[in-house]
Length: 231
Image (cartoon, rainbow, N blue to C red; front, side):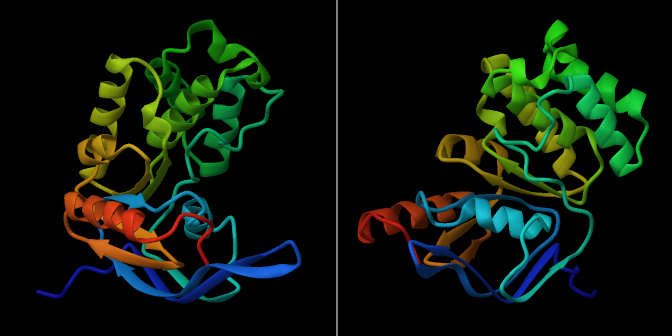
């Protein structure tokens, strides 16, 4: 039986930025294939380039060199800075997303309104939302849209215990038919949501079949590597 096609493939990918007159590589010479049907936790110290990596996967950034192959549709990175229009209401932002992705707008609005539990705030301008409300809206929007690969950035950490439990159940339900990459600084959250892991260290990715193995490696690298910007 042939091996399944990867959900993501990096072919010698490099990405860097100019900072204080010097070019710093965030991702360097990355070559790796990620298997489909996994919920992967993405770990790395602050400044390692996790958000840059998600933006590359989503297509919001282009690599300076190399190629990224995507084995299906990829969600926008969902987190506290989800790209909604601040002068539109939550409902209006969701309707706009539905048109962009070609899904039934009424159905998506109803799903997100029910899931987020924002009440009347769902119909208020986004500029009046707290950080947690924006995160709920972004997470609900992403989970309401059909993607082959979901990119989640800390968004499941907001709300009370009941809401986090509901978020975890929904994420797991989506993972039965899709793949996911989740960024979180909380190892317990990663253990609850993810089955495997990837560790970003000095511009390179290490893949692990088990999330606990990824967490142990990440924590060991934190102990052994001096703090400070990577690259």
